[in-house]
Length: 286
Ligand code: PAF
Image 1 (tube, rainbow, N blue to C red):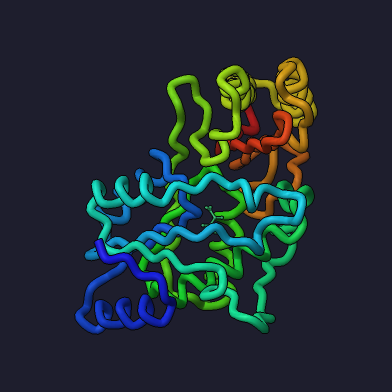
Image 2: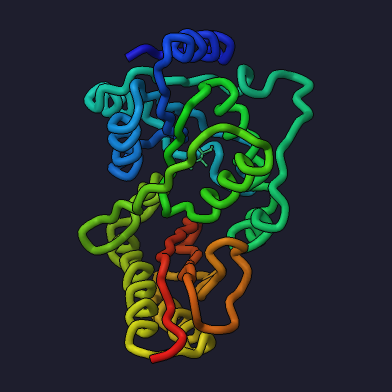
C-alpha cells in the first residue's frame, strides 16, 4: 500500500493511473475505521482497478464547540486494517496541506444542507462538501463510496457532483450494524458500555416506525409521535434533535403518506450525538 501525504503527489499518481486506463475507487474517511468503512473499501475493490482511501479529520466540518480535538485517531490500527483489505493507496494529508494559508474557497449546497443535521450543525455540510470536492480533485476517482448512515451527507455530495458536473459515480452502501442494530460509527467509541446498549433504541425506533407503516398506520403525525415517544422513554437519551419521516430527496418534512420516505433520527446521549435512518416505501391505499 502506497502512503501519500502531499496533494500534488497524490494527484500526479492518480493521473499516472488514469492515463493507463485504470479506474480508481475512492473511500474518503476521517479514520477510526470500523466494519462500515471496510464494507465500502470491499465494494470499491470489487468495482475498480485500484482502491484509494483517505484519512483526514477535516477541521472545517466541526464547529468550535464540537469534537475535532477529541475525534478518535489511531493511524497504526487503521493502516493495519487497510493493508489487510489490500488497499492500493492511502492518502493522508495534514491540515496545512489541505488548507494552506489564505484558503478562501468553500462549497455550499443550499437547502439540503440546512435541514435535519444542518439545522443543529450550521456550516457542517459546507465543510464536508468543500473537503470532498478537494479530495475528488486530488484523488481523481471514477467512483466514490459513502455509507447510508450519513444519509444527508450522501444527498449533499450527490447534488454537488450533479450541480458541478463532476464525472464521479457516487455509490451509497448499506449501513453496517452491530448485532443489536446499533449503526457502526467512529463516535460510538465515546459511549460507555451502558450507553452503547441503550443506543440500540435508535434502530428499534426506526424498525417499529417502518413496521407501523407496513401494518397500516398511515398518519404521519402518528408515526412521528410514536418515534419521539420511544426515544423519550429511553433515559440515556438527553436530547431528541429530530425524529420523523422526511422526503428522501429534498429532506423536507412529509405531510402525507405515499411514495418513498426517509425515517431519520438524531439524538444526544450526554455529549455524544447519534444519528440513524431507514428508507421505506409507503403505500397510500391499503
Ligand atoms: O463521513 C465522513 O467521514 C466525512 O464526513 C468525510 C466524507 C470523510 C468528509 O470529511
